[in-house]
Amino acid sequence: MAELRPDFPLPRHVAIIMDGNGRWAQRHGWRRIRGHESGVEAVRDTVEAAAEWGIEHLTLYSFSIENWQRPRSEVNALMALLRRFLVEERPTLLDNGIRLRALGRVQDLPADAAEVLRETEALTAAGDRMTLRLALSYGGRRELVEAARRLAERVAAGELAPAEVDEAAFAGALYDPEMPDPDLVIRTAGEQRLSNFLLWQASYAELHFAPELWPDFRRRHLLRALRDYHGRERRFGRVPGAGSADSN
Image 1 (cartoon, rainbow, N blue to C red):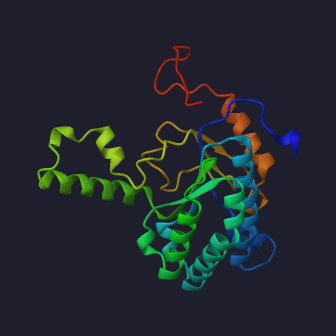
Image 2: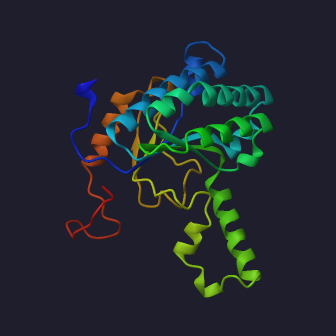
Image 3: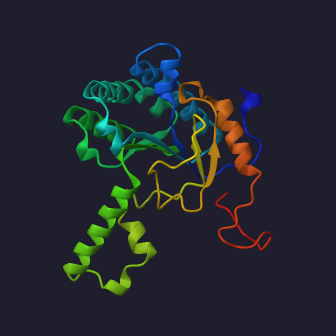
């Protein structure tokens, strides 16, 4: 819809904590998995809008490392939903020039889900309009620990001097060194916390907390968050008006 197209510069990278699926289902008297299923519609509309509007990177917090602690029946249902989503959305990804990438401990996923994920990554590898990352079995603290361990192993092996371990080296040891830092992090359902999401990368991100539960989130809500972002001054530790530049 033309009236929902932004007419201002957009952030390069938007990351979203998709919260509220379970509460949405409970409000309707349904099982929690129904909320996750309905959340797919929000994912589809948000992804399509982001690609249409020219956002280069979109990262969705899809399954945290803590989510493995949920009841086995819910985890199994979520993995089945992931497999179905990856297959059914391939035409949408390809038609919109969207490259899919996973962020997190893919090795933790069931073998069949990991296989479908890798197939979808390969099929969409040529997408050059937007990169969509699904954070799966992801935890910010675990990512930092594993990055530190990789650097320690390189130092122990004589490949890297301790003095060479700087911010650039650390960023290069993260799950996806090619991923630019998010400019804007959106969280739905009114909660105001990062929940272990992109702790290193989101250091200077702007935060927007949307009251809508994720299954109710649509492109108009994304546009509202983008407009909120556009109205802010990103200072990166500088004083106001001192020539700070954002990533637009």
